[in-house]
Image (cartoon, rainbow, N blue to C red; front, side, top):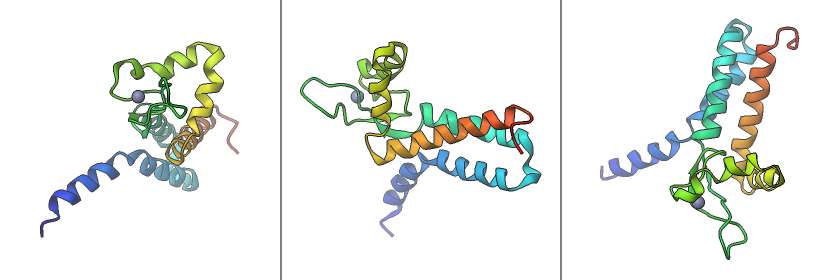
Length: 137
Ligand SMILES: [Zn+2]
């Protein structure tokens, strides 16, 4: 059994996707009425925070001479990669309104980004509906 090291790194890679697991629990909480709004709100917040600050996505910060931007791994759709200038690049894009469209198109630049963005949107809506009484039917 020489694969223990590989298995460890595989788990490490999959471990980054725990937010999707929380998302599945969130859907289960919506289906199961016994879960109650508190569980739904908590799970929504967890999934939202994960997609903003933890999810494994591509950095995508603008890089001179590269049309598709930085391809390093970033943590969350609001954060950049380990390069200092990229770290807050996306939050800056959100603050300067002219670049919000650029930010939004970057969210869907690849499959991972799309998945994480959908998770963020879904958990945000789910939390909103759970928080506002009367919206949920
Ligand atoms: Zn970067």
